[in-house]
Length: 136
Ligand SMILES: [Zn+2]
Image (cartoon, rainbow, N blue to C red):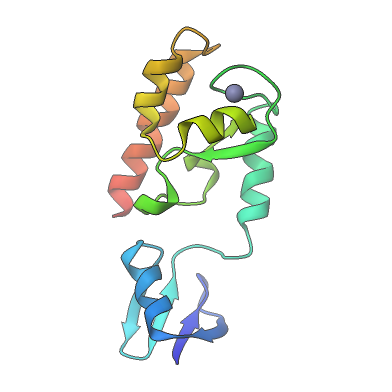
């Protein structure tokens, strides 16, 4: 078993080696020594981040302007995108599903005529991508 430390150094439930590697490969954790990883995010906070992102975006889908009930990762989790609000956009279920794993820019190009504020959305995407590159 691998020891797991929280962002602030608190001990969490230990995990198996392959899970530890998965977290590290996704840039969500770093090795402290051969037996220990430290998480770079707070695993308990996603619900809070999600709520904060929805509130910030006024519960309105940034892709189409309809009411939003979900959040969309700008840099997808599968590509190591973080769960922090800066990487999240309020999104309706339809846009979230339609975009799937495509890049935010390619979906923006497809939706550009229905996006209420494409400049704001474009800026958000650039900022999230920049933060992502800096963190990796
Ligand atoms: Zn939408």
